[in-house]
Length: 241
Image 1: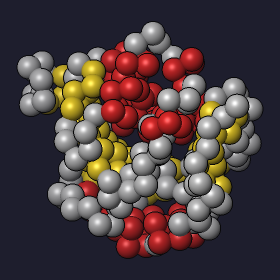
Image 2 (image 1 turned 120 degrees about the vertical axis):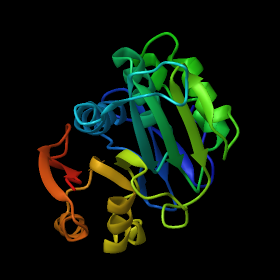
Image 3 (image 1 turned 45 degrees about the horizontal axis):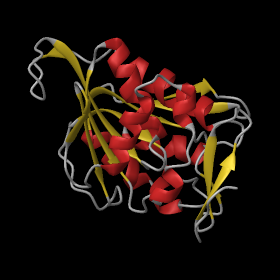
Image 4 (image 1 turned 90 degrees about the vertical axis):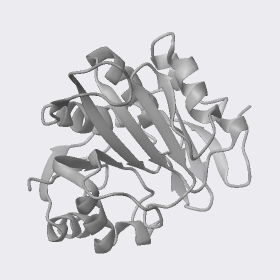
C-alpha cells in the first residue's frame, strides 16, 4: 500500500519506476510512461552528456583535483531528486566535477521519499547518495559524493538571486505550462539566458510552440529532439554568445 499526503501520492509508471501525482498541480511529476526512462533521456542524454562537450577544463575549487571538467547545473523543480541522483552517478562515471543547485519551493514529504524506488535501477551506492540529497540541510552546500557539490533551496526560480553566467546547464523541470503558467513566461527564459554561461544549455520536456518562441525571443537557439516513450519531442536550447 502506497503512502500519500493531501497533495502528493505515489504512482507506478510503465517502466516500473515511481512518480508522484500532485493534487495541487493536477498532474504527475514525470511521464506516466516512465519516470526513470524520461529523466535519463531528457536530462542526462540530451542535457548532461551534451554539455560535457562544451565545458572547458578548469581548476576545480570545490575539491583538490585540478584540471578536471567542472559542470555547474541548476535544476528548476528538484521534486523527487531523480534528476540530481542520475547526474551524480553519471558524473562519477565520467570523472567530472559538478556543482549542483536544485530549487524546490514545495519539497516532497520525507515519508514519500523513503518509498521511491529509483535506486532499484541504479548502482549499489545510489541509495546512500539519494538519502544524503534528501536528508542534508536546505540552503547549504554539501559534498554528497566525491566531486559532487549539492545544494537545495526552498525558493522559486523567479525569487532566487543568481549571478550572471553562473551555470553551464539548466534542467527546466517545472510542472507544465497549464499547471504553472507563471514559470513559462518570456521573462523566465530571459533570466535563464542571463545566468547561463556562453555555450550553456537548457533542456526541458516541454515542446509547446509558445515555449519555444519565448526561448528564441530570449536569445536561445532552439533545437527539437525526439522525446522518450509517449512523447514526440523535447526541447534543447543553446546560448551561443
